[in-house]
Amino acid sequence: MAERLDAASLTQTELARRIGVTQGTIAHLIRGRSSGSTHLHRIARELHTTPGYLSGEIDDPDEGADVGQRLSSDELEWLEIYARMTASQRRLARGLLGELVKANAPSNQDQTERDDLGKSDPA
Image 1 (cartoon, rainbow, N blue to C red):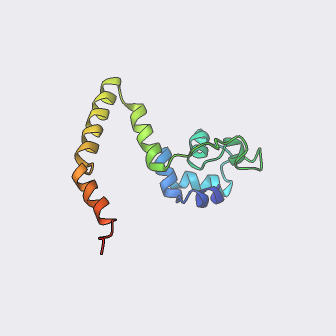
Image 2: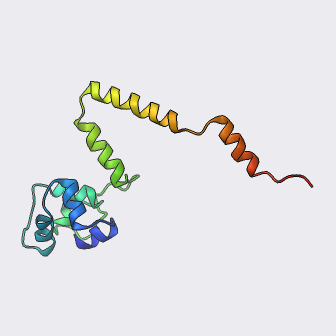
Image 3: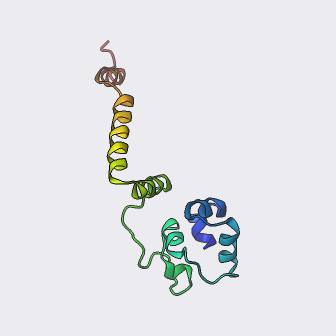
């Protein structure tokens, strides 16, 4: 598990926060003092591997793991928040986020100015 933490650039504390356990629980799992956890599936997802690898059943951390596009921890956190929302909260959140993106999107004039900066003046 420690090597998967390093590969995912996570600390024990950050992993614990993401899955809702204490850092001590993660430390016990790493040291082998605890052979299993009810959170093993969530830990495996955060570490981009499988519960089988974490429990020592298989040796390859990628065997059976989703090898498709991996989401960043921020993206996963957004998905978890979204999953806890009601349908009306989701509609409201999509609307608010859409407005936020529009409000912060560069205008066409800004893009034209950036394009012009990339052109050299004819001499």
